[in-house]
Length: 445
Image (cartoon, rainbow, N blue to C red; front, side, top):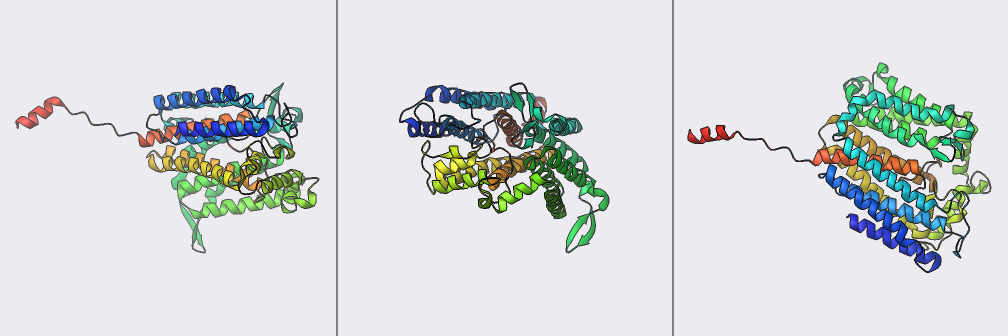
């Protein structure tokens, strides 16, 4: 399966290069390094997690490879005689940097598999990782704008020429914290209180955790102007508390709190209201707040069913097409068929993660794998839904596809944790050792 994934990436790279210039430019360097990295990742999985689901790594490798292809294709627009406009904010070295970040992600994957031999050992650090996750979320809010503010969101740590988005790693730490906390408290949180319309509501005294998490998500939205991180943070907790308790009432409470918080913040804060205005009336604000969304929609419409072909579209007209709107670039050049294939790949990755959660016996590992799988699915839904105007647009990345190191490394760590849980779930039980002397006595008797 990994060979098949690498072959698809190779074909996509060749198609993009031929579409841009009619010849294979830069193909051996980028694809060669990428193939070596994926083979190294495969060797590490075989060494440290030999019983893991064999599809997790190929699926992640395929998405990562296609992301490198698209970033290289975008970076080549308007250069070396290629048709198109050069994209502002996209360096000529973007593809090589994405390959380097892929290497960092693979190293992170190997470290996770080498040092975390059982996912349940992370339960020992439940509150430590919870504190780390909250700190990572809070740091950008207290930094000056010059060190944290990019493209309308205050979510970065910028030091010199280096930048990192700590929220990508905060989600992983908080997933561990939520799993450890909910495993310890799920019996209490599952207790029924009053019954309303056939639904057993939780006791009022048990609403504290969800209210605190809701308030924290609103603080992220207010002080960091980041709707995406706020939605992922709160959505992950609500999903995990539902999985832990099997109480539908927690889902209803979570949805009501989310809708209430959205209504309040939209009426109190201009940047939130602008997101809704651009969503509801993008073409009326096509030269202002709706410009990015309109350009992305028109690009995908131009792609139609089968797309223009890699390297033959005009995705460079969409601002931030290399990061927030990379899905629209795929939609234009691969068409509806191509983006449906991408969504199926993401769906398979989520399905294999949930399958590992169902198979593993350890409650903490089960909840952790389910939470990580859900947050991956939610992240894809939020950004794809925003790009296609299903929901208001939020500025988050598409896992594995978008340009940027923080998202890519965090995505590989997430896959590493799912591989570790899957290995534990699929590992055959140790065979009991028979006492040879006892066996002889039994036979003699």
